[in-house]
Image (tube, rainbow, N blue to C red):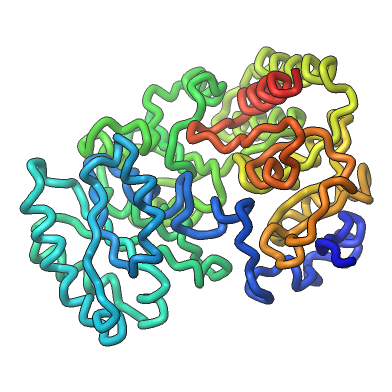
Length: 427
């Protein structure tokens, strides 16, 4: 009988980060695109894949330069009201792709699209796919030619699945493109940018209040900019807060081009680590943050859930707003069981792997994209509640939450909201 491949956390931790099994490396085997992974293993994914992310700049539009098979999943996004008249397609045939003649059509297409719109866009994003990765297209040069024709900024965003494990994956590059239009401006000491997500933090996130208590008057998030003029004021920030590691390269560009330094905070679900992170951040700013009330609310939410499901036994997926290994560690520290994790293993995960191995060495780790997941059997798991869209797919009879909403959970507010949502489905 065939079974889905897995390793226990102890096995992974003992073998070390230099010996990650090939089954957990998507470039070492065929990819199993199950319904659990189709939502996120493509850079054109639902949620904030390259396409939606590329339109985070206010008043921007996108020209998609791709074969029909690569552009088809845009139809779902373009049906959303906020993206009406913002997606456009370059018609291409097989000869265009083979000869590369589609590249000569792009500047004219950009000019025609802009001329046909009632309102001039702030920027045109050109979204290209693996076809142009294989052709070795110099998209920067094509964009410069399009700028000359259209008379406005044109930027590339690369929907290259081929570079997902490379030095600069698609979601890293698109974050850089988003801020490349900012020009040097006079700095204001009471302004900060939050970098990392394409949608705002949840409105009740304590980070806003903590920043205001430290004397920060204006907090910019690209998703909350009302228009292009407000977007441009992000160049006035005194410093940037990086809330997702994929925004690191963009923050480094800010530092190099605009002389804006950055501080990095992580999204965590362990309340003690959130507390430590805020205090370390406060010491950098020269203030002492009062976080007691926020932490108390978060830990009360954990206890309220525990009363409903003291026997909670979690499957934690990776298609959700969090790191599955960090979240699994948080759940174990709160006293719950975590029999299974679905995750793409990176060197950074081993920080959490070591501690998970101490608390729950037999926790099984599966790779969503490994072909033997065809044989996954939920009956053997002991799971009775799930977090993540992928975990919900594997355990369709269990209560669970997708936890992949657009508004981003963060800090103590993220922990509180997570356990409130879990309590609701458990009840």
